Figure 1 (cartoon, one colour):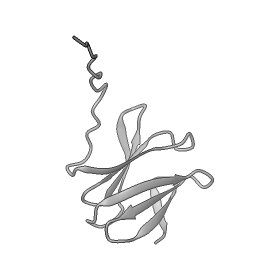
Figure 2 (cartoon, helix red, strand yellow; figure 1 turned 135 degrees about the vertical axis):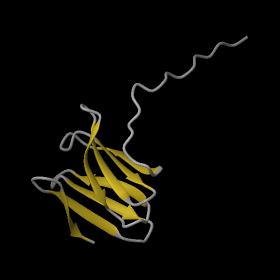
Figure 3 (cartoon, one colour; figure 1 turned 90 degrees about the vertical axis):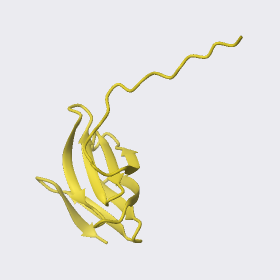
Figure 4 (spheres, one colour; figure 1 turned 60 degrees about the vertical axis):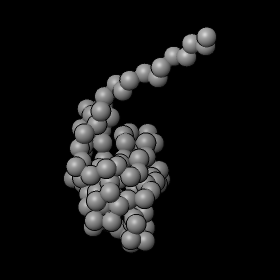
Length: 101
């Protein structure tokens, strides 16, 4: 009889959206966190040290987020939505600002 170990359970469950998660991206050291996109078009910027949401952006106005990428040189975030738009977000002092669509 072969014995296989079960995978470990989660260390922590991040709860922050009422909508299912459709895209996830671990950021490079410049942003130090996790980005998640939801079925209702939100982009959540997580701080993994505190396990809390830093920012919530209405990235795609109700159309779910298909993909998330980061641009290390400018610390920007690129999102792709189901509606067909590719959007570039740049950090500001208090949140993120849409700079290109």
